[in-house]
Image (cartoon, rainbow, N blue to C red; front, side, top):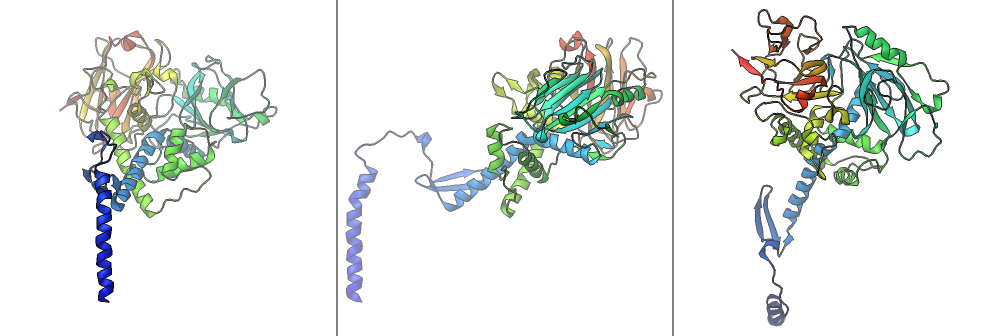
Length: 505
């Protein structure tokens, strides 16, 4: 036993003797590099995810765990901010489908205008909305568009496919549009259609039918007489068109701000072709377990991480929308009005850069992408400005009273409108007023002596201002969109400015 112990000690001493020259050789190599300190990793680093430890740059097990947890978290956040357009289209089509507007066969119409009972991002109560969703997985789909309407068709990632109506190839005359799926190799008609090739199976198409002389029924009847949707395979004998009046119906079209958001994205990825979206974003979704052809089944750790990620991502989107730090959002340097199209690009591009925060700002608050919204021409299309704060920079509160003046002459060829939106849902504010706003087509709207118009916002109408009053609700935050239909040159060169919201005691 003693001999064995001695032998062990001698062996240890020998090993130490043999090791020492090697160690010396390792610390003083014959061919030393001049390594800059900024490429080195310290043995200990203090970070926002805790203390990270390394042995000669190699992370210890606890550091590896922290790093991967953080990677899953940040990718979950980014999946929300970047995947929002896809979830938004999906939620919208699921919403109207649940209300009875089936894909490829149904047309939803707001026959008596939209109101707060239907949850839509930036819905509008001044025109007759028409909505339909297409699924091109089984082949091309025909959409017949009536004359005099205005709107876009967008793909499953809210990318613009085509306009229909006044800014589309039919130029407001109406006509037949043929939507063709990606990779389609079948024969297509050579004439009679405006052909639109979509990169995705899922598509959203919506347009406005304008109300003239307060005749809402005429606008709705014009749609019913001419609007159709059916598969190309049924073109020789189209089925009877199914219309669904969506006015007053309670349903939701807004994507989730909870873990369910990732399940919505998964539905899109499973349905669409593998190459329907940019590989970068498909890879982002795959990195958190959303992968085509495989079930999305995160374990308890991953589900907890994504639940946390979506909460932070939702807060981030709200910060970008309600408190933007990009000065380009401001429509005027001396006003609180903002633009949803930073830089005037409907694709959120600027000199090769995808403006990520600008894309988030738009898609968190709005739906529908078309160049006509970003590049409206004087006298045609529509222009938009949003406000979330009063003249002092404070959030608009439903329990307070405000007034705002639009100077004369208001630069529109058609009409202007205000609609108020709920700070929570971003949909029309629920009040006792059906339209949640007002517009210049209202015959009883009062003008000031100089032709300007003052509009009042608050829980109760000021005496004598009932016709110029928009109701808000105590305890609710709100924001608004000012829409100009047929904006004129003073809007574009900014020689005309709307007032800010002034707090009224």
